[in-house]
Length: 226
Image (cartoon, rainbow, N blue to C red; front, side, top):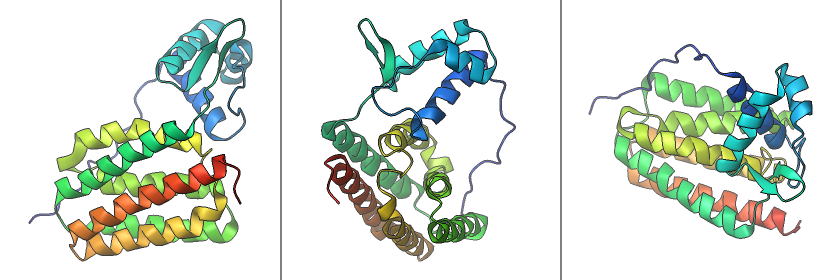
């Protein structure tokens, strides 16, 4: 079977001021700078991005519709909180879709794509050694994107992008579960090895288990357990 590769990265498209504001708010949330319940102040965001209030208000409306924010009476838009049920649902969908993406591709991991995955894994090991949670979170997203963004799973990948952002928000980019980094990396390596050997069924099972382990770790952190 002929190996296929993700399409070359294209230049970033033009983004509106509202899109820039939305991205800024998302980064504030994922970094942990604005925890759940924090009010999003239009003027503060506008000044940070260097735009007027109007596109920020548009961004807030969009993020409310995407469930990043919720409207509170007499308060305004605040950062959405996550319940255990939310987390179970998000990770359940993630597990199903990431496993499906591997099954749809049905090809061993090899060539430039394997090299890219190995580069990410090497960087992840460095990030763990340095205790760089933010770097690991970015590499984690890159790892899963490399596995799921293939010609056969384009639609699945597009669906996953939004889910990844929401679960990154829930776990604050691994800041709620920093102790899980070494185990997450080991699971990534096992998935990589199964794919490189052409054992797609095994890789899919490992991927599903990986998502469930991440879910359980986050629920444990949310419950305040050590």
